[in-house]
Image (tube, rainbow, N blue to C red; front, side):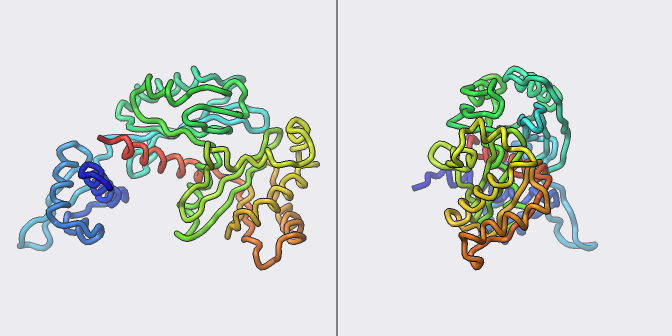
Length: 331
């Protein structure tokens, strides 16, 4: 059973979420949208205004009549950091984006490096925190397994077995949400492209690194017991992982992707199956469909979608998780 503090926090977030569109809203509108009582909405707006999270401004309809107060999120109160690193076509890079609560991009960029260590991530966050001292929470995406705050089986071996969440939270004193990159991407794709009841799976096949997968079922990302779910590079392809990585090139990757797709469909039954990664070409999608149709009845084949650029979906998933982290840790 939820206690009073938990219920209060949930109600605060419900009202806060209404204001994320960046438009002014009155207490009466919040009461109608949330179903909360006028007294509860009044109390929460007053508390959020005292904290500085929202700003109220009187507005009058017509020449006469009582003025009402419309509230908006205070864009200067807090910001959220999305940050990560990746290995694409042999190139290591750190990427980031800083956003307001309404999704306005304050800063973004990418640094390519020959080698990336945890210290490089710390330095970048230090630089961004000096520029944006109101950073409230962060989400960090990795090409590996996020195991209870530790990085495992990473495409960048220098990050294997690093307790990155503990390091960053102790240093910068804000909550950090760590997750596999595919889990962020599929969550962002679901938020932007899917209906509420959808099941969507994304298969990502980059060159020279193990492929990844993410699945969202009605908005819930399948992560597994220790967030290992989606590591399709560990399927039994009949070759070693080293041999698989060598064959993940344009000339020989297709059998691996086709087998991965044919394995995923009967297990997860997605309505939408998205293919991405620098190896995947639009003309290959038909070949993959034909391979899957050999074993899966056509009536149960999902919609096949080619998505060459997942950047915005990635950031959308990270941004939402950073906001969730803010509310999870709010006292």
